[in-house]
Structures are given as C-alpha cells and as structure tokens.
Image (cartoon, rainbow, N blue to C red; front, top):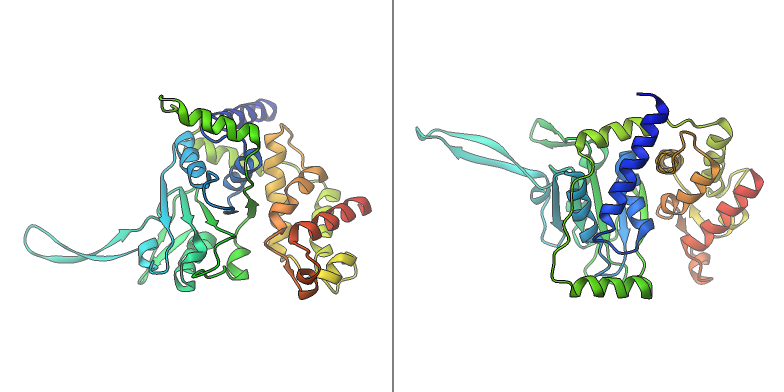
Length: 328
C-alpha cells in the first residue's frame, strides 16, 4: 500500500471513529480528539472537570467503537494498590493440592478509567506509575506485560478539595496531556436533553480494532518532522523554564518550574497524530501550537506572584506560545 493510500485510509478510519463517538458524546470535540491523540501517541490523558460532563461515558464509548477491553477503577481513600494491579491468591485443585496464582486486576485492560484519581492515597496513586511508564506490572519477582494499546484516562474534580490527595508533579508529568472539560453550549445541552428523551438506545458499531490501532500508531511515527518544527518545540519548552537564555519574560515573572524534557517529546508526538488526523504526513508549527496548552499546562508550576496576580497556567502559556511563535 502506498503512503498516500495509507494516509487516506487512516483519515477515513479516524473520521468514522469520531463520527461514531459523536452519536453518544455531544460537542466536546477537543476532548474527544485529545483522547484519541493520546491513544495513538501511546500516552495517557488526565481530564479535569466538574461531575456530569461525560468523562466516564467518553472512555466507555471509545472502548465500544474501537473494540478494546475497558475497565473502570473508582478511586476512594480506602482503595489499595492490590485493587488496581491484582494480587496472589491460593488455588486448590481437585486433589486438594494448593498453589499460588496471580489474579489480574483491572489495570489489565486496553483502556483504563481512573475515576477521581486524586481521592486515593499517594500509595495507591503510585501503583499506577509502573503500569503507565513501563507498561508492566510486577508481583513478587514476576513481571507481567500489559497488552498494547494501553491508555490510562484519569479524571479529577477541581472543586472537591476535602479528603483529596493532589497528584505529585512526578506523576502529573507522566500524563501526555491534561485536558480541561468545559460546560456544553446551549445548543449542545439542548441536544443532550433531546437524546435523553428518546426511547431508543443508541447503537454503536466497532470502526477500528486493536490491530488497526497499532497500524495507525506505526503510521504516526512516519510523519515527517522538519528541523525548524523540531526547533520550535524545543524553543517553546525552553521559553517556560525560568533562568534560561531564551526564557519568556512572563515565565521569568510567574513560573517557578518550567516544563521537563517530556514536554518537548509530547509536543512532537501529539503534533504528529494531529497532522495525520488532518491528512498530512508532515508536522507543522501550527500542529505544535494546537496541542501546546494541553501538553504543557500540567508541566509548569506557577509561583506565588502568579497566584496573587490571578494568573493561571492557561493565561501564562497562551502568551508564551504566542511569543515563541512570533519569534520563530
């Protein structure tokens, strides 16, 4: 198959996936695209938004459309690491003999929803770290491989602070994107209510299977990255780091710690998928700009002056991105 026909087929598949998800998820185009980008880029996604905006429904719908295994973990203060990764159990055979067997936990799925992740203790949150980073789970002296594709979609509620444990920066950095889920518009809300009134349940059909996802991932890695686009991603990350030669003035004033090198990697990886979704086999600076806010907002830590002046990662990053684009 030629690269042009492979590209056309990939765009067609992704459009069908987005259209099928749209039968259930009204609006939220940026959120849907962001989750699909993270899946194809091989990363994980953190969704932040108030309850009832369809975050759980989105991943369940994605699993049905992509014909992937799905599991949901409700994070609570009493959740233990074994409840996520699994544990050793004693089995008795027909002759009365006993042996240990590893019982897989809900982490052994293609799509894992970590619902309200900031309500669990740090010990339990850290149980996800090895799985997210290494794609493995270790029990005793045995390491179990997780099947690809593997995506953790974690959600957190920004308005609930009592009894929560904010994610440490090291774990936040392991999420490829942090996406803010906004309230629907009036038109979208009207359509949501209209669909609620309907008696028939929406029928969904699988558009791409596991093998198709892996092929799309491989095609994303073939998207070309020109030197000036790579340099733009590097300059953007350096602009967020205070104390550097190319630091943006606003970063020097308001940012305590800038993006890690993972930020530059994520900009290129996510931008490549976005380029493919738009039918191009070359990465552009516009692709980098489009994903920059979602990629960097959880990778910068603001200082006290920023909070005192009412600044947020969004307000600071928007000016840094614009300034870097003008300078490029």
